[in-house]
Length: 214
Image (cartoon, rainbow, N blue to C red; front, side, top):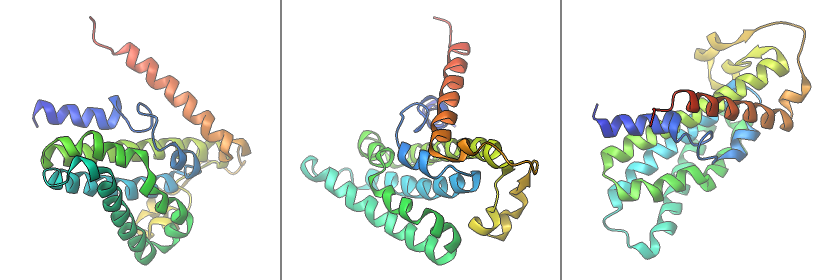
């Protein structure tokens, strides 16, 4: 993998992570991360839209004029979200019932439109593909980590009901840590902000510790 590709991978997963660095898409991040399974489902749906939209925007960047590029990008993203929404409703109906409202809101996800405008519209298809894929994976990892922290502290489980939300093949993910319950606060909205705050603080500590010497 070339140096430029490795930079895109590192940016998507860590240095320019959608949630922990760019601070984008915080609405779904705060809303759907009551469990790791919910975070995984939302992250994968967003990754699919982000990846395909990046590639399509890179393909048409030479034929779309500057004056109409934003409306074109929005229509493109809305069409992709509609396809993903219908696919989830058809094949992962239980997940769709949990995330249905937030799937539709992917259309206005700042991360997707932001990558289309800031990167895909200015780079070749290959680079746009890598950027979309790893920005999506980085976003998914952020949602899963926040969801698992909240679920573990709030319910004493990990990936609870994953088989119902994501299908029987994901039953192996379901783990019960204990039967003593947990802190209700962590599965309420303040818990999302608390988990986010500690993770952001941890990332900044790691960034400073491993920053290259100048």
